[in-house]
Length: 81
Length: 226
Image (cartoon, rainbow over all chains, first blue to last red):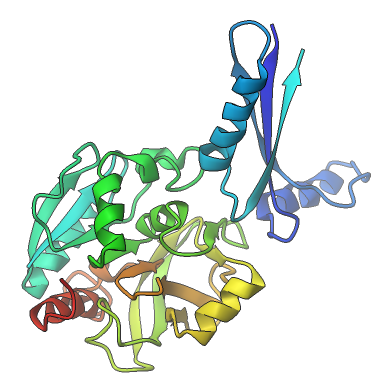
């Protein structure tokens, strides 16, 4: 079944203390690959059947109104098989 | 003057807010999140706490509670509205004031007595203070860092809409040490620290917080708010 996935991330200019804490914890565990870490939210929305264009448009609206705060966050909407 | 105090599921400071209203000489009226009626109140306080468990984002779900619809309508019409801590977050989520509250820069939950300066005393909630007055009231938050873009910050500074600023070291990473701001009209105030916990020396670090509640009563009696 297809899912509609909404990813919400803090805008690049907004400080992300949680991401910074994760970035600081990684090298303590021997993981030295990370230059920076940003933490966000992922919403998985199930609908009946294949998502329609109209449903995706509704999800866009919901993402702007509720799932994200456009003052501090950006979001993307996509369909995942 | 009747002042409504809203209780959302997860609100903590409604009783202290109601006590502060009554102590100042007003009449506190309990409002429930699921009420769509304001019971004839002249002003509303959104108190602190963790409404809806801070799920999604602090204040994001409360902002769409049934009670918020008449509150937003009345506030846009000039009714005094004070959001404290979680209430400030609700105001920001409802876009009644600009900006947003984000995680404290050091990630820790803060709980301490905090010095502030009152920088705008012309507004409904701050008229009892003197300009530049230093007050001491509790600060307790996990997501209290006030964030906004540079244009908004310049506008808030230029229009004198920062009503309170932290004194000393920045406790939570708020831009320009912002502790509280107001809307353009001046009737809506969002404040991160807690004046309702500082209304007498028996229960608080000072009685400095009482000024917010006497301010709105005085403004009401003077007829400067409806």
